[in-house]
Image (tube, rainbow, N blue to C red; front, side):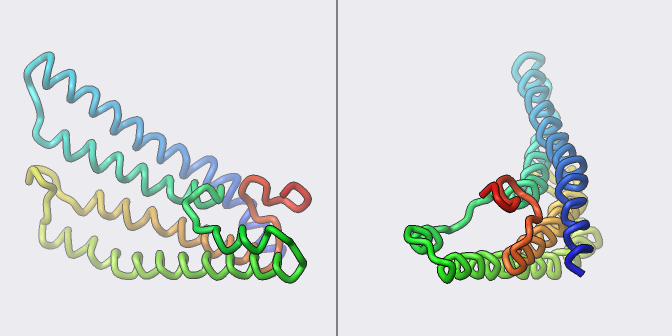
Length: 184
């Protein structure tokens, strides 16, 4: 089983995170930024502005940020509370180092469960927003496609959290910088 998980996690980091999630997040960031610059030019130079454009810019930037949560989590660059782990690591012993790994794994599992709950509650909301016709602030663009990207971008983050928890429990190198054995 661990060989299958290791193979999947290597694929997850090298293919999905690096070659799929990162370019999609970059496309949303660049698209939103480019659209914002176009809106500034059109509004202040040409004197014409589209009401819907501001909402689209905000949504594109938020979607890119949501997708990059997975990338940051895979690289273990996401915000984490490490005060207890750093305190235990000051005078390392095998028992303390194992306790640190267990704390990290529990934190990863807790985060993964939290994200799964967000998915559980978020997916029905996509359909509800579509059925109700909920629109963005300017009332010109429907909200559900953007909310769908938000919610669906959380699924890879949950999987990443569970893979990192597996790494902490099994002490295998499943990805992220400096996580390979002998490089940490």
